[in-house]
Length: 105
Image (cartoon, rainbow, N blue to C red; front, side):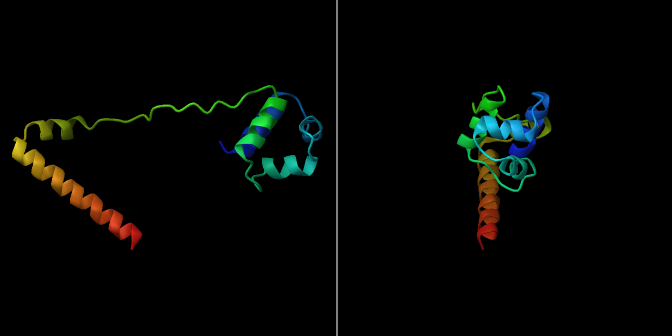
């Protein structure tokens, strides 16, 4: 969810109008409206302050990515000899380098 949508959702859950939130935050109703409609991107500090006005805190802890493992590919690689694995790894590295070069160029 975008920051504006988050502020709007939490403001509504809190039963506040844009005007009431603006008073609490020391800003204008139009500033809250622009933020909620996605016309402006707040700084982390601004978002944190607005959430505090709504009775929430901003939690920015890192979380691990959900990574799925292709078991068939893993099994295929484990059946390779060490030399084949090295060749496979080097070929993959060349492919990635080619993609990076194409993206830059």
